[in-house]
Image (cartoon, rainbow, N blue to C red; front, side, top):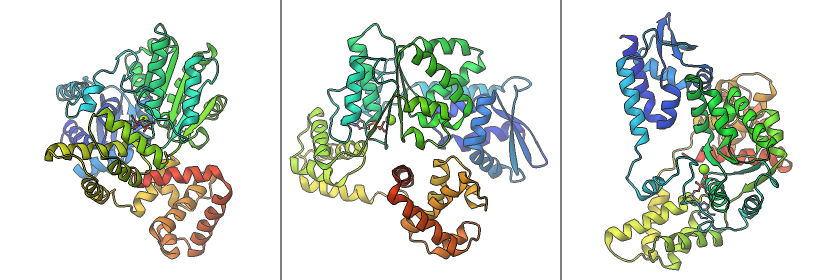
Length: 459
Ligand code: ADP
Ligand code: MG
C-alpha cells in the first residue's frame, strides 16, 4: 500500500474516536514519511503536535496502523514538512473536516442555542445567574464569583474552581463572563477551553503568528480558561500559558480557571503554576443534595414551560444523584416522551423511564478500565503500573489500582498479584491495606480516588 493511502486509512480509523476540533488540531498536516524495518515514521508540523501525539495518541495510532499493516511494530514522530506539500486528497479532506467542524449540527435545540455564542468572547448567553441554582454544594464558588464580578482582578485572583463532571463549572464561569460584560461593556472578556487554547497555539506556531496570539491574550481584561487539566499533559503548553498568565496577573487582570480536580491533584502540573493557582482563591463544587436537585429540576421544567407534577420531579431528584447534566437529560427524556404520546407527564411514566435509564448500560467496568483510568489519571503508562519499578511515581498509582480491583471488582488477592506482573498475593494484600489505612487520614488521596472512580464509571 502506498504510504499516503496507508495514512489516510489510519486516519479514517482514528477519527471516530476523537472529537472533530481535536482531530483537526492534532492530525492536520501529518503524514507518513516511510516505513522501515517495522518502524513507521510519522511527520508532524511542530514540537507541540509531536509531544501530544506521543503522549496521548501513540497507542491508538500504532493500533490503527497495525490493523492495516501488521508488520508495523512501532511508530516514531519527526517534525517535518512533506516534500511536496500535502497531497490533494489530504487537502481536500482537511477542508471538508474544517467546514463540517464549523457547521454546527442542528439536531437539537441546545445546539441551536449554541449558535448564539459570541465569536469574540466565546461566551454563550444561555449561561447566566438567573438560571443558576445555588445550594450548599456550590455556594462558596458562587460567592467568590459574585465578589469577582464586583471587583474583577482585585480580590480573588486567580480564581480556581474545581469539581466533577456536569456539576456546573462551565455554567458558573461563563455566567461570570456574561455578567462582567453586562456591567463593564468596555472590558475585553475571553472564554476558552484549554483544548481550544492548545489548538490556537499549534496553529499560531504553524503560521508563525505566535506574537499575534500572545498579544491577543495579553490584551484581555478577563481570561476564563475551562478544563485546565488537559494543559498539564504538555510542558511546552504550560510554559506558554504561564507567560500569558503572568502577563495578565501582573496587570491585575482577572483570571478564572476550572478543572476537574484541585491543582495539587493534577499530577503533571508544574510547581510554579500550582503555586500561582494556590495563591489565589480555590473553590470546589460538590454534589447537590436532594432538595437542591429537586429545585434544579423544577426550575428547568418551568423554563421549558412544561407541567411536570412535583412527585414526578421528586422521583427523578431522588434517583439521579451526582450529575446535573444527567438530571437535565432525564427531564428532557420525560418531556419528550410526553410530547410523543401527547399525554401529560405522570409519576408512573417517570418511574418507567427511570428504570430504562438505569438499565442503559453504563459501560461495563472491567479490570482493564480500572487500570486505564488510574494510569490516565496519573499520566503514566499502563505498563509502568505492571513493572517492578519502585519509583515513587509508580508505586502509589499501582497500589491504588490494586485497591480498586479489590474494592470495585472483588478480585482475589492472588489474581490481583497475577495481573500486576506476577506479584505475590501478599504484595496485593499489603497494597490494599496500605491504601485503606491512608484513606482514613488523607483527604487528598480520598479526593484522587473519588476522581478516579468517577472516570471509571463515566463514559
Ligand atoms: P461542568 O462544566 O462542571 O461539567 P456544566 O457547567 O456544563 O458542568 O453543567 C452541566 C449542565 O447542568 C448545564 O446544562 C448547566 O446549565 C446545568 N447546571 C449546572 N449547574 C447548575 C446550577 N447550579 N443550576 C442550574 N443548572 C445547572
Ligand atoms: Mg465544563
